[in-house]
Image (cartoon, rainbow over all chains, first blue to last red; front, top):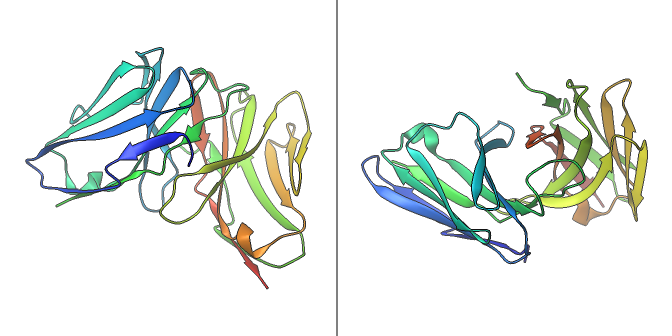
Amino acid sequence: ETGVTQTPRHLVMGMTNKKSLKCEQHLGHNAMYWYKQSAKKPLELMFVYNFKEQTENNSVPSRFSPECPNSSHLFLHLHTLQPEDSALYLCASSHAGTVSGNTIYFGEGSWLTVV
Amino acid sequence: DQQVKQNSPSLSVQEGRISILNCDYTNSMFDYFLWYKKYPAEGPTFLISISSIKDKNEDGRFTVFLNKSAKHLSLHIVPSQPGDSAVYFCAAGSGYALNFGKGTSLLVTP
């Protein structure tokens, strides 16, 4: 139990589908993140939210749309994805959105397969 | 361009011996460094961190060393245990961006 819960854990979707990944953190943190891990690549930062405001968008295609209604919840809305978007999507949270002195805690990830 | 590199994709160590995992980074502005451990089908779990104002941080069997002049980071696990078998990620950054290495898969054999 990491304090960061992601649902669903596994998702298979077609290229024309619309689906969402959900993340909830129970750690009282103010910053939340989406990371992507593809095979044989390092973890890639996608989005950072600090106090519900997006502070970082790491050149992510618009077919990925984040939503942060409050400091405890984060969504990643998915539409018209491509097979190369298949990956492990990790949600994370931390006290603040800056790196220094700040530990990021990860959820268990959502495995996404686009067919 | 990768700013954090873990050049050894895998490492095998006997139980009870020392495991040394290495990490190099290119950006001299990085001021915070972390190690994460990841089991299959789970998210990364925080292990230990170090700020750029220090050169060593110890937590039980885990010690992280930072050599700023060489832009090199290492994680020492002593003594290594079979339960330490996992993928270890090095991360470094400043500002809002934390950069990860590709990971080193550690196997501790009995």
